[in-house]
Image (cartoon, rainbow over all chains, first blue to last red; front, top):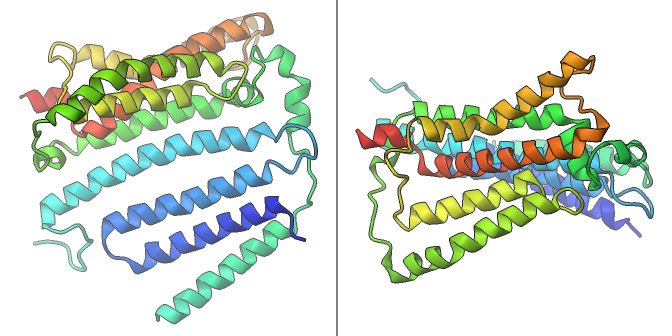
Length: 103
Length: 218
């Protein structure tokens, strides 16, 4: 019987891999930003679940603190990325990176 | 091509899964050290102790990252918001904002205070405060033009500046950067967290708003 903690951690690996696939496959920048956020959620899930391997006592607080730090960084990076995306759209008329630089 | 990519990603996922499954099923991690020293950390919630005391460096730099992201957003100019014309909020959103924003501010205050002994703290409280700001922005509220210049900037950097000042102040008494003397740690953490909550909340709302509100006025 597989430990539930590892089940959560493996789900995190799954989320990370799905996000990486979407990041590479999709050209639209909004989808890329969403994909990076899903990858981040996978990493957070791995950290939080592996912190709970302390039998009986409270979970290890250090990974939890790292996840809180990571969430704030992810939110600010996402906001910056979305603004960059809007800027790209206002410059080129589409929210995708062009193969050639605009003339 | 896509099949090759899929195969590569599945191989990577298998490798990661193997790495996770090869970890020991029982591991106390660092919780032994965090519980041992909780009495001198100034708080009783271990996560807050890690964030504001043991690894205060992380939190300190993270406040800097938040400000950097805001600087980046502001430096991109107001083209981003040009397409989002403010529309009249409608009676439901308007009234919802009026009812919810005071409640959100009280909840943020509670979360910040409770962070010392139960889950909560500056980031959770700051996120709730930021959500209140987003709700206000959606309902058409804009910050008073007399407050958008220096007062807004001071409140944005207040958390980071006070963190740095408190961190360096005790270096005069032969301590490391960000090392708090145990007898004052509780009060100092409360001070830093309170101001950090304010700065985080305002920064998150400002990130949502997009361009620098001062330039938007012109």
